[in-house]
Amino acid sequence: MISTYLPQRRPSVPIASLLGLTITAEVALSYGAESFAPNLLCDLALIAVYVAASERRYNAMLAAAGLACGLAAYGAMLLPLAIGLAINRRVRPRMLLVTPLFACITIIALGTPSLAASWIGLWSATPEPAMTGLLAALALGSLAWLTATLSARPLMPDMLTAAALTCGICYALVMPGVSMAIPLALALVHRDRRISLLTGFAALTAAAGLPIPATLTLAVALGLVMKPLIGPAANDNPVLARA
Image (tube, rainbow, N blue to C red; front, side):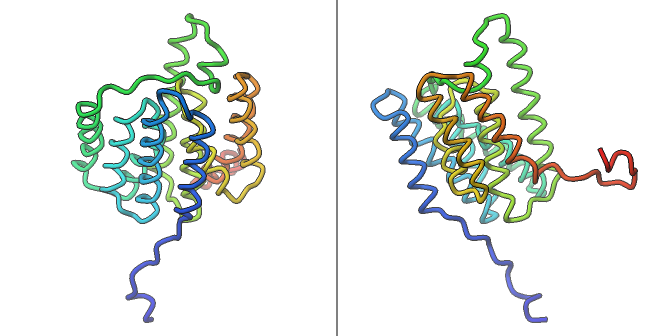
């Protein structure tokens, strides 16, 4: 009976290890490049989004998501998680304006973020100009579907890492100019070692300039990590439930 009146325990997040892995990955992937400093700042903002989401500080989560969007072109990597959680937890609709507000303030203060070159994802594996429209439609549709899924499905505390990693890998697959530091760090703290190995191999092959193997390997990792987010049908139709 006493436990009913106690505040709910917040899940512990390996902040120190995640921070160290992210910085190490970003140094290894982009040190010496012009995009290193904004990428590192964007990575820190994305970690703030993940930590604020785990601690249920949704206003801070939306603010950090906007800051990340203004720091680098791939700063919207965890935006489906932030918006989906905000809708799922019934945050006041006006608070969703915090994200574009912080993004605009950051862009005005620091300038428009540039699109860095990357060797992973569909944009790198299929560089034909005729495919641009199809790739853009696929990117918008994938991120919209992911946002809708996270807004409709209740996320248990142990599913947050899988949800954030799903957003990171999906964004890396469908958007250009992505740094793999955050997906790699989240994969290394994930409990499934297969996902860690696949994501690490994808990052290595991308760093070696091999976009097609990197993209295919990352797609396999996405299929594994997103399984907990796709639940069975929520009705009594046996045919749909079996499917």
